[in-house]
Image 1: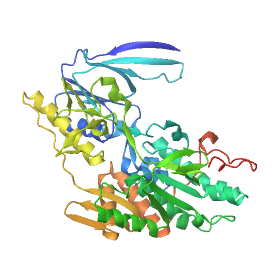
Image 2: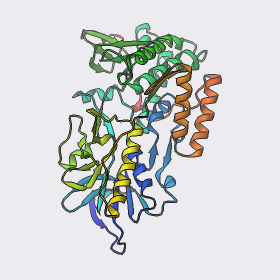
Image 3: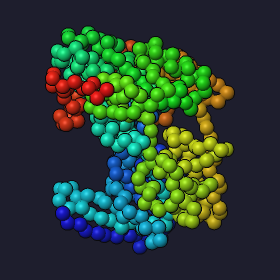
Image 4: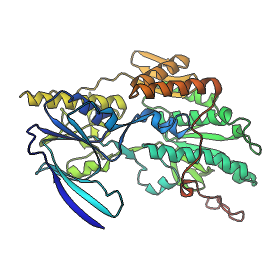
Length: 452
């Protein structure tokens, strides 16, 4: 493989160059916030799209298709003339020279291009990835949910589990295929568990001849004492009861101690389950380490009050890659916080261009939402706390409203309306390479429980 290097420059353009790495909520809102600023912006992302991550679990559970919750960055920013979009991966940061190194990749795969991109101001907003707490080998058996690729893989595994159970003749192995576990009782885990239970009991009814999909066991495993720990105790308990009414087994108070292709272990007890999903922990994007600055335990960059890196006011970090403490508590890694951080960085850059100092970032908490299933949700809006049908309608309205683009809002609303009246999910086509599927069942003479 050969490699070439080139330096991207615009000597003819005297405008300050703002480089934004990451096209998520923080990066996109920062770029939009600079739409009328006298700057030129390069938005770098390794993908070509912005993803509405709060609805990613709906792609994984076949309720929505990938284009319903994603939109090309170039399309979103097509009318903002001071932005250039680059699809590339950042491989290095030189703080002293104010340059970053990009890996573009050659279309034919036989060569790799390296671009050196100079900046006046840099914003890193590359988000977070999965954290397996030192057990990275679990990832092959319990994939997480952060990208569209993750969602499509999970959807394939979830749907294939029912197909494998239909073809299985051994009762124990069939039961294992019909055993699902979601590890982590936060909003993603709760939403996945509730939706999967609804699929098994309603969507797939009467579609199989050798199995009853409603007999599938869906377990939600949370190491802490309760699910939705960020919510008030009362709402957490209501969420648990709503999950149990849907048929979800909620297991709290014991962490998962091992995961393999056959199932998982809770303490000393081994639980057969051929399909597992990891929703228990996140770690900051590895790019934070390239700054060579202090990080917290999750790898997030410890930023100053204005979200800049201490000692380097020209570098900002926002979104899940930044650790921000406000009133003694960390700002949560949620979409509204990332949007507010991106907007704040844009406002600070505009202030500096005018010769003023930027203000300290202040997060406004508008509340937490989590949906469990049909007409079941919880909403913590500060003084107002909702559960059940009212919370569910509020959740629907909020997520449709914040989607990017009219088309996405319309398509999602139509899909949800159809699913509400029919229980059907239109994105249930199974495709993809065979290696993405769960490992084949063990031969009959092998006892997967012998390690107990």
